[in-house]
Amino acid sequence: MSDEQPPAHDETGDEQAPDEAGPVEVRESSSREPNLLRGISTRAWEHPADRGALVALRELRGFDLVTRKLSGMITERALKLSLMGSAIRVDRHQYSRVHEAYLSVGAVLDAADLPDLYVTRNPDLGGMCIGIDKPMIVINSGSLDLLDETELRFLLAHELGHALSGHGLYRTLLMILLRLTTSVSWIPVGVVGIRVITAALYEWSRKAELSADRAGALAVQDPAAAVRFMAKMAGGGDLHDVDTAAFLEQAKEFESGGDLRDSFLKLMLLEQRSHDFAVARAAALKSWIDDGEYRDYLAGDYPRRDEDGDASISAEAKAAAKSYKDLFETTADPLAKLLRKFRDGL
Image (cartoon, rainbow, N blue to C red):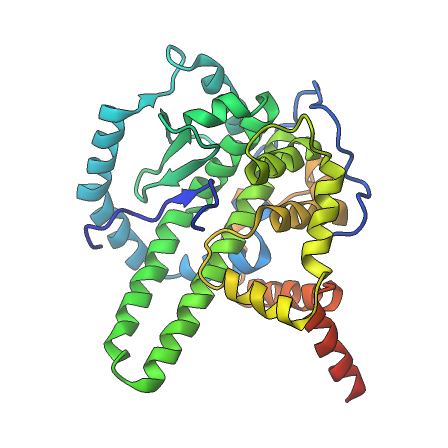
């Protein structure tokens, strides 16, 4: 691996299709303790498109081990030293409230080995998961000021979901593959190919964010808190004069409003974003919760870690293709509607 900093999953979203409000009730955080999801596999929260890529990349045995070890030898040591020198490591003596929240979400997701957690001075709402061999989670100090207890747990579980799924490692593997393609960049068709690959990488990154959002939802088991978190990401943190139901309606308008020009503009805006827009993420998470898989998992019917070895690349590829097909069939985006009419006409 190069001496570049490993990819960070930054939850500020700066770099970076719902129905009516429906079953997701926007309310204050529940005081009920979440169900512990013993032995849960990361496949439970991974978006099909994300999961298909991860299952395939996990077959590159040896390549991932070399990348992990090379990163751990130098780059991550430098990152850890930087955090040790400029941030505050969370434990039972420092930021004890955050420490308890972190232990709580780790217990719900049955994470045996929690990454080191740090709080860094940054007034913005957000956090990130960095590192490959031994991931570390960093939370902005602004998150502690702007989030309530359940929302903070959602953020912590989101970043923990990235770490448990190995997004840092496999994202780095994909970026290495991307750099290898630059050898053909002098060929005219090679430039087009590189742009296609780059767009695909960003699309995978956006789906990885949806996976982490699902991990957050499973950890806090309070859909309203997840919606509030997205609204705070979009609006800056103060929801006293914000209607979260209207926020979800805004997501519906974002998806279906406008004409073909807006559809193409959205594609252009998303092409090089590692995170989807906050309203779109809220809608995607709500849709997943409403579809029933979320409730099945809370009832104990979820993929188990001891079954991960049986995961099939072809089955996951089919699941990924189905997720895109289902999205195409249900989205109200003007371009998709036009394409469906054209297909039906044929």
